[in-house]
Length: 157
Image (cartoon, rainbow, N blue to C red; front, side, top):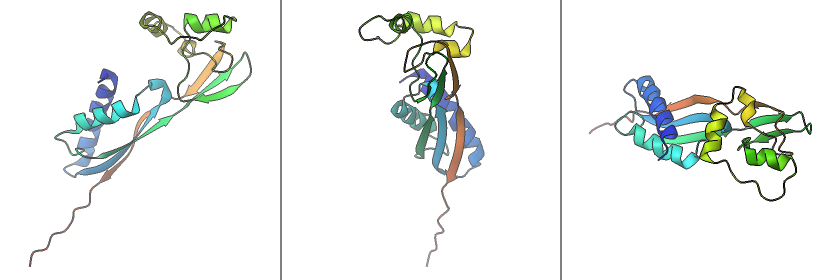
């Protein structure tokens, strides 16, 4: 299981457990932006694991993934993307006219991207692969809603 999702879920569960104040949680809704690159099923599994023994145990998890918007100065297009393409040497080469499929980034390329000073510098236009882009949205990370179980009244006769 990826550590990123596990860490996020542990923090969410901690907040939810405090908010529950002894009540049981039936469901939660979490919004995560596409730029976080969270794997939905991995997130759900990590949430279930983090929620064990807390008020959120057995709660349904509704994950809403919001897109990033990419405005390209090169081609003038505005694109919403659930998987914004990263700028890698292979993508820069593709934008310059190289033929053939563009492979995903290697681990070394991802490390290089982490060192970029410009927040938008890690992305390219999904249409023309140009790197003169402005990226907005897709970076959300919010606990949007928590639903609590109703206490069923039990009457004995």
